[in-house]
Length: 166
Image 1: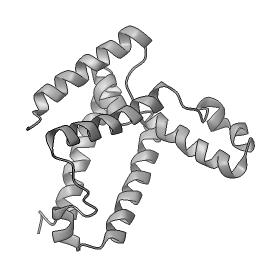
Image 2: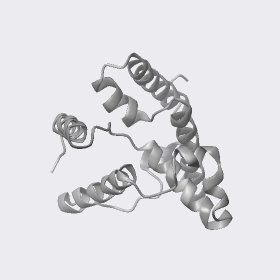
Image 3: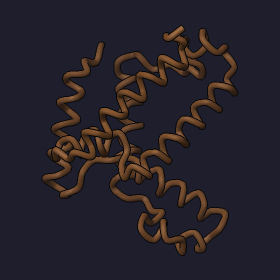
Image 4: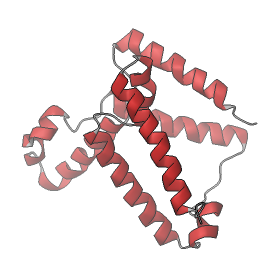
């Protein structure tokens, strides 16, 4: 079964409306990652973690955003299993054909990309879902600017990484 992006987009829009209606909160994911990093840090540093100003503002706890991210993973896994599209793939074909099929390299690149994405989303006050879905839904100018920059930088980065310009 093929998933059409139009139906998925409409579903995300409806989910965003329901989230506003029931919780008066916009959809977003990046805070869940910040809270998770706090939970991991708390394993090593104990209660000192919660004394940091950042974690006073974003307490390292499981909240509704954290559950949303968990639901995204579970939902994606369930959809892949139900449609027969699930497969373990450590190195995608396009990446492998361009950079080689070294799993450690692929994991390092993915980890570095995740760190940069997390830092960027925290500096911007929201992630791609927060700005792209919730911010644009509220007609926030900052979110529309952020989304344009997301797309332009993503396209340029992909072109540079995969050698489209040369």
